[in-house]
Image 1: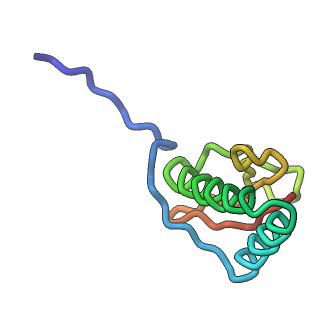
Image 2 (image 1 turned 120 degrees about the horizontal axis):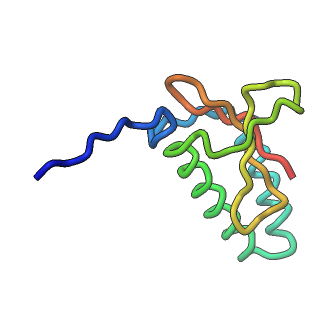
Length: 104
């Protein structure tokens, strides 16, 4: 049987490690604390959705939209599923995904 030859896409799943600073972790904790005040279940769902989004981006880092409007042409943004007001900002580097920060 002859199988077609396919050329892998440069944007195909790379499973990049994710780099983040303590400041970003603190920002996410602040968001969770804010959500927990009004609804602890929503806060838990946000943590799960946030982790899922980071995992998805580590597997497909070019999913996010380029954001040259932010003054850094390499920065991308991606919405956290089910939490449309929350964006992840990140950069795709050759050997890793660097989280720049969350935003509301």
